[in-house]
Image 1 (cartoon, helix red, strand yellow):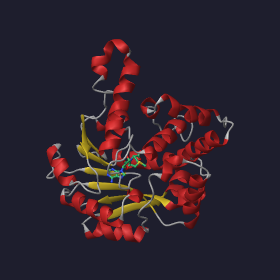
Image 2 (cartoon, rainbow, N blue to C red):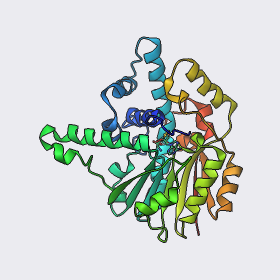
Image 3 (cartoon, rainbow, N blue to C red):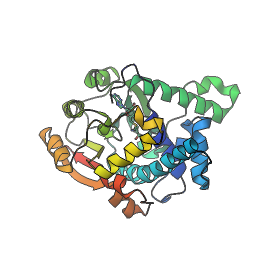
Length: 305
Ligand SMILES: C[S@@+](CC[C@H](N)C(=O)[O-])C[C@H]1O[C@@H](n2cnc3c(N)ncnc32)[C@H](O)[C@@H]1O
């Protein structure tokens, strides 16, 4: 999505709500995100609590929000679990999260203790996240420790470097240079829940920039959407039913696995795994109610040798 001059991403909030709703409930041996709830605002926690309790609210609008969070939880559990596992297997010392949104990995994965994390996101979304982190730290520590809270929740990662970038207009490489990323050292790149919101040209330009800063030993973990009539119809229905969350952030590009593999191959990255969220959900025993959206979402891992 091109969010120039736009507000912070609402889909980032929705996926965070999904993770908060599923924490400790779905596939607890393979999925956990206890930090997600901490970066949500009070009103955003209400549907999370309702989904966790299994008590749908009265009223059309509240019920639509409830169903969105519940469905989103089913999608993010296999996606998060698969990505966490891929990341743990590829700790390189540098992790760049493209379109980080309310990603909590830098605050919850102890495997990142020796890793510097660059959180790249649209400036509006990133400002919003930094405010949320400071508020969460303050809530955790109490009002007397407001100074400490100003730096945000303590991270598990060695460092977190906020890097504001609009993929549609900004130079990602220049921004990473300024933020201290070392292109001559291996990097693990994570691109979760962002590709559909970019045009094909923006996806290609981002892959080119990633490849230009990628040396052997690096890896790219990418979550993307394949074309699906059923999933598109479901998204349309949610909008018609009044969800304002997805309406401001339309999907702009969908990729078949062969197309994604070809694009990455063109830039020297070889896909070593590429699974549907449905297969990943079956593998970890998480709920798989929305079969078509789980079937059309994928997580691919590509390595650079
Ligand atoms: C659905 S959220 C996913 C967030 C996070 N990766 C996750 O999975 O929880 C989409 C994210 O992509 C970011 N995004 C979308 N278009 C962007 C653009 N043109 N430039 C920078 N970030 C963008 C949004 O700001 C938002 O944080």
